[in-house]
Amino acid sequence: MNWANLITAALMSVAGRILSAIGLSFVTVTGFQSLQSYFVQQVQNHIGGFPQDALQIIYILGFGVMLNWIFGAFTFIATIKGFKKLSTIIQSK
Image (tube, rainbow, N blue to C red; front, side, top):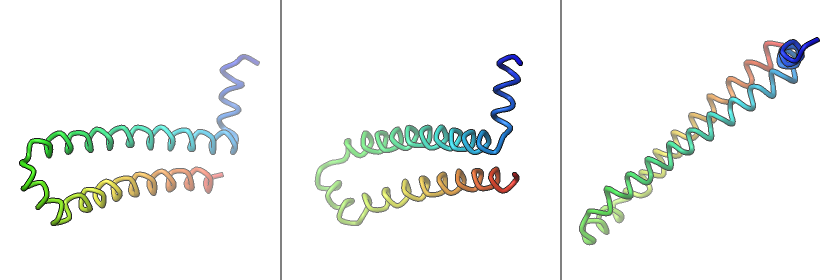
């Protein structure tokens, strides 16, 4: 039995499917975290050009909390979709 057949047999088992789904979820979450950090950095760069008085008013109005909610919602959605994929693979076997 060559390596390709061995790897294919391992990935087609239930444990292999679970590990593949976990690996795919990990890659998805890691990519999403890097995308989120890029967006946070861009927002910080653009906010840095505001005058201090205007920036204080924006923060008093809750702009920082709003950004946390938006980024948290995106992270939550990505996590839920990853778990749905994982549960679908587990239920199929």
